[in-house]
Image 1 (cartoon, rainbow, N blue to C red):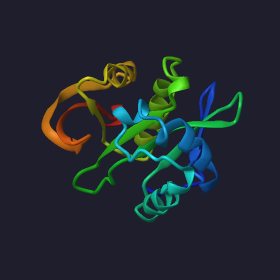
Image 2: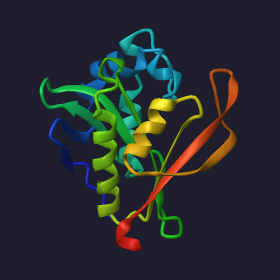
Image 3: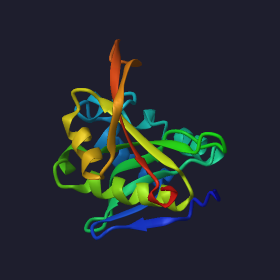
Image 4: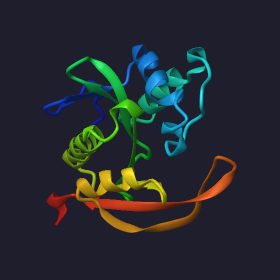
Length: 181
């Protein structure tokens, strides 16, 4: 797999491109400063934009050759969310987990499914064998997004993540690269 942070993916309504430091404000407004979004997207709530650690996240992903894309609405050029590789595939484990978040004012418009669908195709084009994603059991919207992208239910991992002062179960979905069948 050749890592290329200059890749740009497009759908009819969205542009997915590598996250930039200049996305800090939009990410703050749409994700980091919204408790409803952070109910299910694992990140720290920020009171002030200056608290943002986006630069560290970008640096980490670049160093580890993981894709961290801004989801940009073509119509307004606003960064409305993000989608990323949460894990680095290896020769033995050619699997990657993806995560995503989108601003609340953009919920229920199909943007997340549109972004996830093209991101999975992109992962497969890089030779990834299996893409996984997970959500909290009560996150019905995220479950629908994964199912719309034809991901298959894999199972529940008990007490998988400690978030909001408790251990939480995660529901996992997967998709196998059709080129590998």
